[in-house]
Amino acid sequence: MGVGPGDPALLTVAAVRAIEAADVVTYPVARLEAEGMAARIAAPWIGPEQRRLPLLFPMVVEAEPRRQAWHAAAAALAAEVRAQRRVVLLCEGDSSLYASCSYVLLALAEREPDVPVRVIPGITAAAAAAAAASSAGMPWPLALQQEPLWIRPTPETQPELEQLLEQASAAGAVLALLKLGHRWSWVQPLLAERGLLEQSLFAQRVGWPDQLLARAAAVSPAEQPYFSLLLIRQGWPAVLP
Ligand SMILES: C[S@@+](CC[C@H](N)C(=O)[O-])C[C@H]1O[C@@H](n2cnc3c(N)ncnc32)[C@H](O)[C@@H]1O
Image (tube, rainbow, N blue to C red; front, top):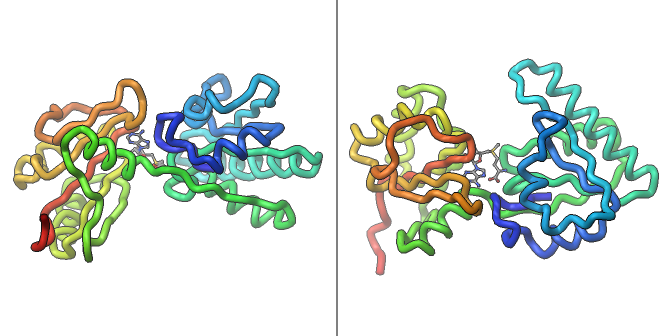
């Protein structure tokens, strides 16, 4: 289930009810001793009587350890269900968008097709960033009228980003670039060169007490934490208030 981007108030009623009804609360961690972002977000909704079960998803590029982790997680969830326990898997943001739990969902469908699954959507970080900016006096509609909204990982290289910006401009699309983090050190100068800093919103740790929302022009071109994203609007529809 999606638990939203950071603020525990941004879990849906359905997510809170499912957590409250669970015997076991599982959540992804990159290291076994880590607390896990999704678990921290949902912490106010998890009771002391509920068993917490971290599921290890190692942050490595090799395929095999990741495949093993997804299958191990699916097996652990299926074991809880077979033991008649209600189990939830927490997922940061929305549960279907660049989410570890999507791989577990696929592994479950492949190896445990008889295990019943319910997926609860969550508020995605891009939507929360737009709402937070609009609430802070920087109106940031994500998409209007016929505009497409392209949600993408930030490209790995400058030429790829240049090409994406050109394609988005030609299509009149708004861009939401995730996984910005360390790439910001070269993305910022590129936006400056193309005169796009004023039309771009930088959002970091949306929903957390140290949330940072700023026009891209105000954010220095240094590496930024992983939980950072960028919204880029290169134009507006002709008819507006
Ligand atoms: C693996 S994706 C997960 C997306 C998540 N499932 C969602 O629906 O938002 C991680 C990326 O989402 C963005 N992100 C997630 N939570 C964020 C937050 N609270 N503030 C800013 N960006 C966030 C960052 O770009 C981060 O690198």
